[in-house]
Length: 177
Image (cartoon, rainbow, N blue to C red):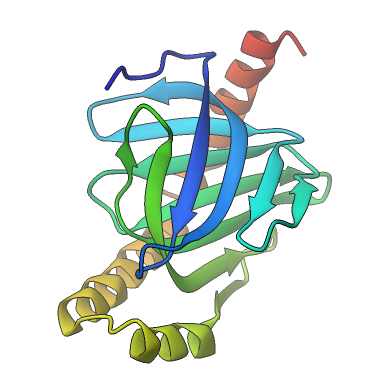
């Protein structure tokens, strides 16, 4: 697998635990890759849902994926400040087709004022039964919620304004905006 270079585009595909395709983002610009992570940006990116519905993202959003942590982070850059949508998900894999991960339903939303909400607990419980999530996966996800909340509380990585400024500026340079 050829690692994408900065300024190139990748497709992102999320799946459910049973292997079914959940959602696809086309043309995410790669801002940085390292041995364990990928930082990208979506800006008016086409998103296709599993049922075929399509929509386009409304604002620039920095995306952060890691091969160690069981979450990914979307930092949506809005006029009223940065909002975060964090998916509890498997670490990503990258192949010739796309960056891929398994979405495990639970999400943490962080509002510009710092308020945090754990979302989709009912969906997680239902899918856990329906798709037979193991006790090990349940434990890993709950531990990663703790790590994620620690990152949020301590403004680590994507949760720091400096991080947002650096990567959004880099996007503007690469896209000549």
